[in-house]
Length: 483
Image (cartoon, rainbow, N blue to C red; front, side, top):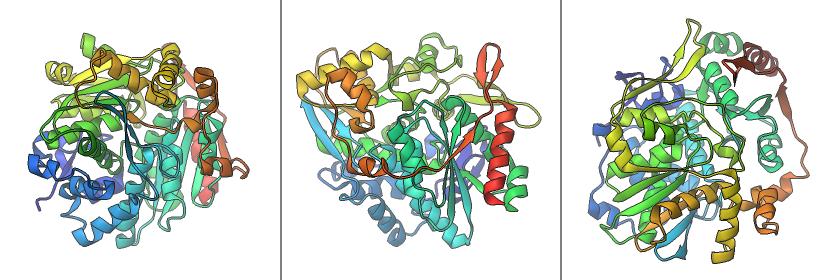
């Protein structure tokens, strides 16, 4: 099996293997690790057809093995995947809705979010490599809602890992928060006075600060990432559309995929699946009011704006990290401009344009207003008897807008979170409360451990951004924890 190498989005000639990319989290030049389009492994039509009716772990093995089998022997890789995706722990369901349109429920894992899939894979392969090296890592993650709980649960109790998770104050539900703050042990949850973009900027700052890591841990390589900037989080998301295709399409048919899109990890994973040979007719980029990507497709100009509060809180992202990977795949280059100390001074700079014509052909981007979130949730419930959460409603309305009422071809919407995580939103939309998942009920009575970053954001050009004071406060508290 040929080895797949991963380059930095800031330098296509800097290539490393999967293990190095996973342990680094982010490239030393602040780029994200990505596979070149020409190096993406291909699956034949017969290989894809043979997936029909197979369980999720088997399909995941077939999709991920070409990326990993040169570094993790098959006899060790397959059990890792089977343990992560045991169908009793994380059942995956494609539910028929109308015509040939389905909802892919990726919400039945331990934290009731699609992010359980990537987090469980990430945690197991990370632990595998760390144990091999007799090393320890501090995994940094920023969350706008579901990522933090999924990663924290996946890493909780692992011998070789500590987890630092940053979430925005007042921007996530109590149930999402408790999935991080009640675990304790090797899980350290930080509440940041700001939005997700500030949390993400803080995570990136710490990941790039080798001097701080050396000072606290005596190991300049101690930090790695579990956000979707990690290649270990990205690759497993390419399995979703393969599983959906195995359930809803005939071999050779083309399928449309609608993706509630925040940080774009799910989106890039689906693009990888298409490049591997999966017949996808159109990828729908379903956005809430945070829509710089839609504006970019329409105008060719990318502007980072201040994020807008929205019911689909996990998608409150004004500058998706994985957009740099998408730009890279289409032949362009995007980066965050930094000063001499590595601090970001301008986000989302494009100095080489991607193939916009190809992107406009491949994607249909659609923005859903806050009011439309609730209208869509209500309509899906009344018309189909199905309760969905605010994020899934964005994917549903975007698909409806693309199909224009014609549900005659294979189409799927990713359901990204259990509606039970958003009882207030569900009640506002349909008038009744959703079923509360069992583990969420249990966590309601547990005590929390939260570290707070109280310093305020800076205002730069009328935009709120991560401040130096917040960075310093975070470093002080991390130093205290691990001293």
